[in-house]
Image 1 (cartoon, rainbow, N blue to C red):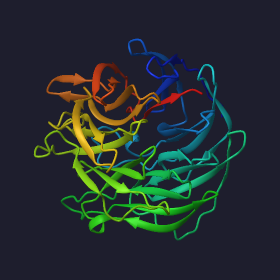
Image 2: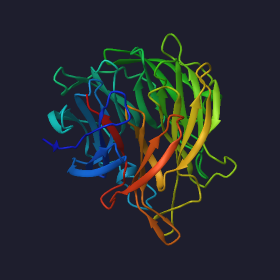
Image 3: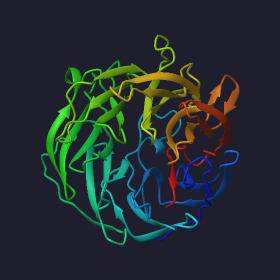
Image 4: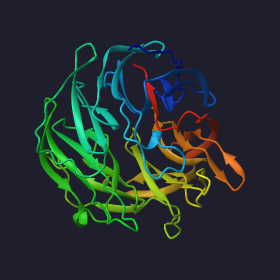
Length: 409
């Protein structure tokens, strides 16, 4: 199956060496391009294509020549409003696309790979030879080789004894290329079910093959629900977002590529941690390209009596932290509202001067409907965010489950 996505591009006025940035945002199976106008800054909506099922996540090749997208008709993005259970689905895939270096157009290459269940995350290793996918139910991972022309190769066989925890949410290869990290969130306790313990599973990694190396689970994984992690660009520091706890933690990266067992610092992500909504969760996080700041999403929305998502009185924001360059300690310096509900994903351009957050779902604040949207921010030299505006996204065909920014070579 062949898909062609024509995307617009623009010069970034903020970088010393201008980089052309392309924004992609999904709505169910539809993937829409946005041209970045750096003078505004502004986003200009472009063309939309439809993938075989709902977009789950995407990741560029380190060369920025290729782009890898995973899709599924199962999971949270396929659930009906107000549903108490999510469908497993039966269409799960991984596709490779070539990025036109001048226009940013995406052209499908090779054959998509069929995947065993809904992939919740995808990434590419540091040398660009393998693409890794994480699965939440059942919790697991797969690795496919990447051919020299960027197409998807064979699945790499893994040991049957891999410890993949409960509810994997992210898979990343570490900066050394010798270890991989599977962030397994677990599940919060409910009125009828005990907590499923979370952990960051650590594996040795070589030629696409993973082997158990260790598990980071403070307090035995109780009250520890990691969702995503990110690496400092130059220091041996790893920042981890704790979903249900609404916390940010810093771990030391060891010489062997693993992590220390306990965090160096734990910080609240909310502006007022004493006022926590019924459904308040931390989301993804990204370290600024200059290594001076880290950004983390806070999400709050609850299903209403009619099955429509409503404002639960919590915090939908991006938390901004400054990073102490000697200790790595993050200090929260701002919580800026995203002007919408459930900012599930956000991204910085490579210049670090533009941030776009994806407010995943339309929510009702009383009788008023707040649409799903892309929220555009300027990033100041001091790391603080200045809100520019939101761009409404039609989610009748599915939620705004993923967005990202690619800077062209």
